[in-house]
Every structure is written in C-alpha cells, then in structure tokens.
Length: 144
Image (cartoon, rainbow, N blue to C red; front, side, top):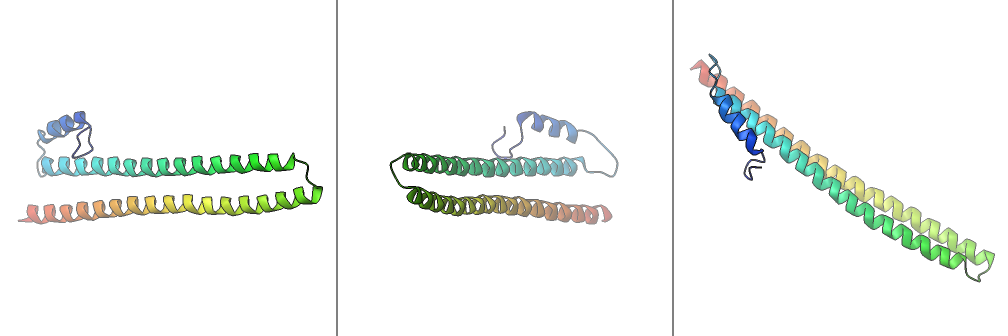
C-alpha cells in the first residue's frame, strides 16, 4: 500500500491508465484525481473505524476481566462460613458495584463511538467541500 495515499499499488496503475482515456469536455486527470481522493477518504475512514473497534475490544477485555475477578471474589465469600444476612448484604453491595461499573463501561464505549463518528463525519464533510470547490473551479475554468 502506498504510504502517502493509503491506496494499494495496483490502484496507482488503474489511475494512470484511467488518465490515458480522452473524452471531449472532460478532464480525465481531474476526474482521476477526484477518484483518488475518494479512495483515500475510504481508506482513512476504514482506518478510523478499525482503531475505534480495537479501542472498544481492549476496553471490553478489561471490563470482562474485572467482572470475572469480582465474580470469583463473590463466590469465595459466599462459599465461606458467613451468615445468610452477611452473604445477602455482600451480594447486594456487589450487585450495586457491578451495576455502576456496567453503566460507566457503557458510557466509555459510547464516548469512543461518538468521537470516532465525529472524526469520520468531519473528514467526509471536508472531502465533500473540497470536491464541491474543485467542481466549481472546473466549471469556471471550462467557461473561460
């Protein structure tokens, strides 16, 4: 993959071949450049999505590890020689802590998703604005 453009090497060959076509009234180099920008946007969007997914997976792994640790501690405590009232109290406290931890975990995941979506939407909006400006410039150029 080309490090500068995030386009696979075979993509460069396609773009170069595409530029060779001649269509009256259409600047094939501009068209190829726009297509290349679209491919770069797609690649960067996929990269951001993968990064977000990896962050969520890492967070999920940490969360599950904590859940199993707490579950193990709860089992140890409940299997011991304690009164029913003490076991019930410990269980209630453990359930409250787990509920709080779960809500916090969901907030963290939601934050990652929101930030990722914001980055992706910003890059798409920027790309569309650039493409629109390029199109306007091309129309102005063809008028002259």
